[in-house]
Length: 95
Image (spheres, rainbow, N blue to C red):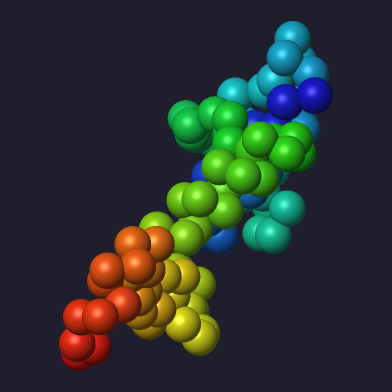
């Protein structure tokens, strides 16, 4: 059953599940008992339980909460000494 949002003027939003054919335009507020009208709210398309939705959520979260990098970055601190197989290069002075 879909989840519908109702808004009370005193308490704020409240959510209830109804069948699509039986949705009322207003309900009694569970907090104060006043009339709560149904509010237009965006669909909750991103609340999936699949692995793909988890990956999308973690990717979006890493945009503003990046992981802390500890240690050396790959390839950043390595110095590569060139090697040669030419025997004449052995006679050259080393730096």
